[in-house]
Length: 216
Image: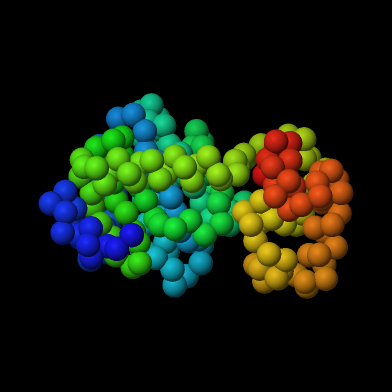
């Protein structure tokens, strides 16, 4: 997806200023009446990333809470989700997927804000908007559900819960070790134990089983 080519579309507006991007996000949330679908590319708890922009974390919580209370359905795909990376808003459906290809927020089927290759584009009703909505649905089907409830996994300690959540998101042993501040040997050992408990022979199967049991 070439953002420079897309910006020539009359239904597309390029937003370079962070203030304009936040204003567009507020407008999309406020204008949604049925559903909001979003793909987040980075962890808002990590400084130095676009998701850590001033006001964005607060906007995320406030806008979702208000619109969900008004009956708007929220579905969000988040990369590398862990319980301490982002707090799901009550009523929000959250799934995790490693390295989504773009950042996206689609409000109903009217407008979208897409972030790709460092460029933010506001997209109006068009064939492109339809394609973006379909892209979200395809990625949603591939993503692993995340639940706040720990039913079925009450005997799972916090460290193992975070490990299995990162496994489900496709993280490698080395990536999990770096993220959680553990040795690689510890991660390898815990992954083997968790796969055995889940009756899984692969990491993918472990992620699916963990989601089905409510461990995530």
